[in-house]
Length: 310
Image (cartoon, rainbow, N blue to C red; front, side):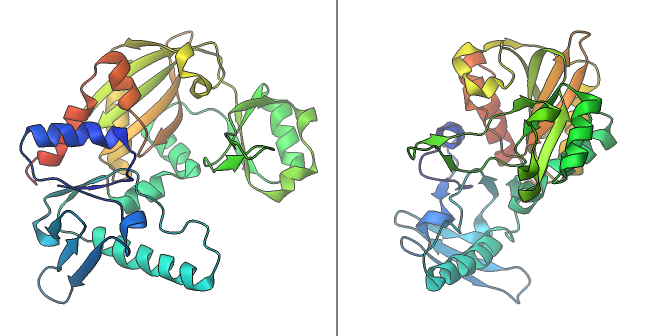
């Protein structure tokens, strides 16, 4: 088993613990951080199947013997680099090492290219609607007039970043741009500088976090008084529930449609008990849910990695 993730990833640690308990051979590698300083890699192509060897400080991994890859959260290949030489090295690593690790004849949870595609919110919304989920009215734009018209028609409206991005406050401290309610009068010409996502606010009674591992579905109701519950996990209460009718089947279909084997879904649950799709993180966090509820998500991922190829 090859686990691709950063050094500090307690979520991956939980899966590795299960794999070790089952006496699976596990190697951990962070390609964006370990290569080329702390690792060597050679791969040969042109034969029936590609073959190669990855050597880290602690392991020698014959790539064609890798049975499964758990693609978690490796360090990006292209952090901010001051020189063109460093940018060149990062690009070669991304397309060379990343390409080799994406071409292994094994199963992936999930394949990195499927994860990369599924991180795009427009694709998420379109796929969710095609599956049959309810989706809030949504606008992605950099046009002020369209944004104001949307807010006036669908208010109350919330703003969401299209992707989480490292950001710092005025004193250099890490900060996050959270989901926030906006009104038409809050919007100005600065909208023209980037794409923005506006969405009709769902009048919700609670949130649902649905974690899918292949065809296994774990559903947790999250109760909080916050618009964006991620702002303060200490204010959450957790209830393991059976998914509302059709939700589990829809989530499994969504994951399959995007070539994934894992998905962390967020739904708003209306007062009438109707789930409304908000997003699906193809590599979302789940360890906190297992800690809070006891759901065997880590064991399910280990089961999937150990599953015989079909």
